[in-house]
Length: 142
Image (cartoon, rainbow, N blue to C red):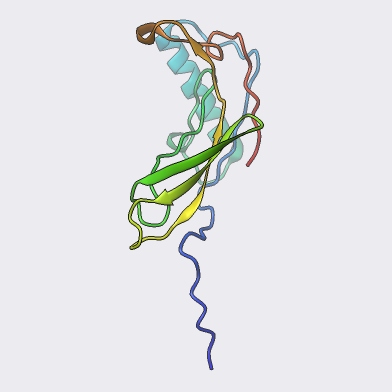
């Protein structure tokens, strides 16, 4: 008798390799053209420093704080996730997530929310506390 175990299709390996470098007090030019030239030079320098098969097109340099965002689609079938019953926790909330394509797809899990910014002002002209420098975000690994 052979092993008839079916592996869970949600089990995936990481295929993307990413390194994040944060430069504090890096002198970024104010003019858009000068800023773009400076960031491209930084990308080229990193590419040359690594000396591996990597091009500057594989390196992205950005100014300011950036956040990670994922869609609300099912990781197994791509259908829409339905969120239910959330609970407040440390810095946000946790909600139950179910695939809307049940019973065809029975993926279930948790959606984890974190406070990543605080915004104020009128809807048309919202000001970000992080972008304004009023708050500094923490960067934590998964």
